[in-house]
Length: 147
Image 1 (cartoon, rainbow, N blue to C red):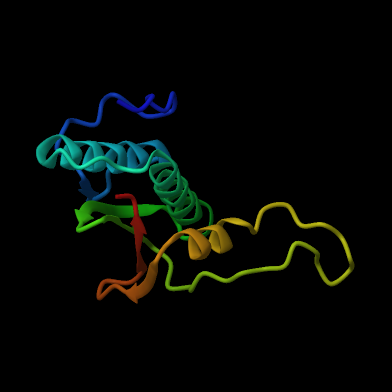
Image 2: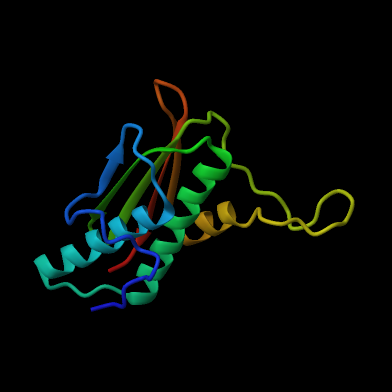
């Protein structure tokens, strides 16, 4: 059994891998859902998962959620499920702006703070999709291999 991330919240009930509708969401909520989805599938199928790959999936979940909070007007919902040999994570926010990658240095040659989350997501995820939501905002869905 993998060590529990100390920032994971214990108050997300087992089996709850979907959240939406005005509830406040933190990166730890999505990480907890990812961990529970993966370990739940392993318990049901007896298939082991790669601990390093799970760490990648947890980092991607944190980055998506943090970016939605910092740049997207807040998280409006998330979904986590296991799809074959991977975990699929979707995070929705209020902003229509697409994610962008920025270099580590600005036009003046100064080092930027932040700006590393989206490149991390794109590098660790096998599939990255950004879609507009009918009611406004966007949904980012990624697939990260873990088995």
